[in-house]
Image (cartoon, rainbow over all chains, first blue to last red; front, side):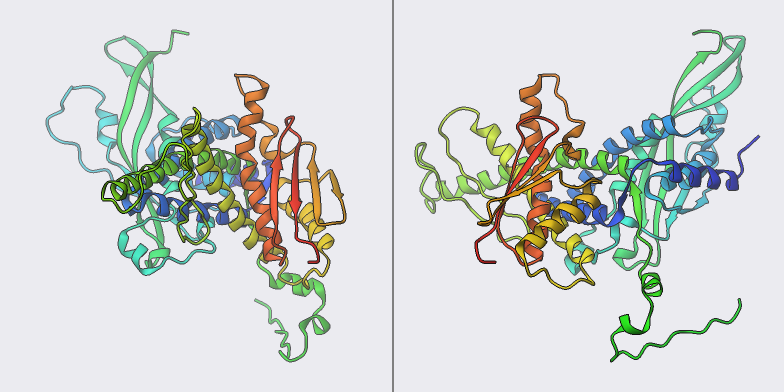
Length: 228
Length: 245
């Protein structure tokens, strides 16, 4: 009963149309650009600015996900692949009105000795990735990066990585499965720890702007369905 | 695809005479928009991020001053006399450190001031460039009042989704713009009570003040903009433009 990609697109479209207030994206681009310049002047360190942008994005993401879950009727995601679909087609669409295209990565094979003998399904998919390719980046509308910034390694739109990381860390995926220890159907509530990085950016002269989201691990706690 | 006739316009003839305005409007790309809630969260986090970065910058500046003072290049900062404010010749931002070490709480005020200055600088950048985009096809405003009215209507509508509620002037270069429900501070509250909320609001109106100042300066009118918050969510901006512009 997986929601198809097209259905997610429609959900995203409807959510965007339903957003009550919209702002001219140019204001956003101008404000963000001025902020990056100010941060560069304050920190004088490109890696540090990358880190601060990501941190700012993390805080924004933790708030955005609540807004998103409240407004959208998205059900639980079955797996990380579906998470990627929702992020790209519904999440980005409803807030930034863009739909990055998504490429799912293959999870690496699980290591042969299992460390704690449990949760074999979830451990196996840790390490899965998906890559978002942004055809248009509303943040970078008026931006041109000079030489020394390019060499310094600044990822201009790094805030987006933080937003994805913050949002996904707050999201709960449900895995319904038989738990041998509890002898009941238990629903595993897992939150995701992800690592989000830019792989390429047209602002740096690359061909496309790509963000890779890698699942580091699930942070899980088992909750028997019978309770609460 | 059916064949389409392309319209060739002779560049020496003004486009407006040959191309109907509806077609000319098509020449511009559609206005991109993003969600306002996302923008609000972004602005909130922007202030927090700037607080941290300004603290780092201030600490570094102080360290350099201290080293220079120890090396004898600078007179040591005397407790009573204020040291000369330093201006970094950076593009848009001006960081001035007035180390008046009289009275308590100046460290906190210094930090707030540093953040405020940065916010205003960002506002100036946004206001100036956004005004440029909005006024691309319009002739320059000849009258100061027209420019102010543009700010009251178009800038306010684009940034804060309403228009200014009240505009007063003394016809001698001072204009007071009043907004009874100013959007950036409309949802601001503080668990410490009203006076604290008003104090915090002063920080959040720094960027809008910058937007107004930047917009006016790009239109050719250079002056000062002083925001004032006495009761949330009402806010007034006093614009002082030199006479005769």
